[in-house]
Length: 236
Image (cartoon, rainbow, N blue to C red; front, side):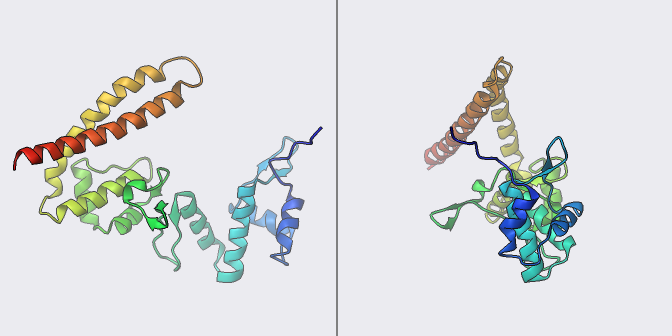
């Protein structure tokens, strides 16, 4: 009978895996980095640390940053936070982290492919979208962009970049409120369908509703594009 493989590592096993690469690593140092909030392994009911492979790679990232870049723990912690929010840490201390875009065949894809779990601070959004503080405030005043909790998401970045591109044709943010109104109506139609599915009993109802939501969103985008294209053709 095969022995099941554990999904976690003990602190001693982590030490063993890292020692060949980092000769000065010790259990005390691992515990110190944990106390500083750089790694957060789970605990067994009896209090023993349970390290996942993600914890191991996170620890390796910290050790490499200390050894090769001589970065202080404060900066390393900021870099880890950027990674957790879907960003690429800045190469310079005090720099702005940038979004990590999905790629297709090695080429950076359109901003619509920005990871959905992307979380940006206000300054990071301004930097990534290449807009000013005044422009972002204007977009927000027209309801085109909004913050979710403490951060802006990938959709906010995509919207900002699209507004910038459209503005090059002389169309200002105030003219785009019609797009927001139309989008809100489409959202309402989609939610009419998915709300009833989410209310159904069963563990698969949420997954089904999410799938229907994605499909309807994709179809509505295609329909919207087709209607705009057809309208432009009729005007010629």
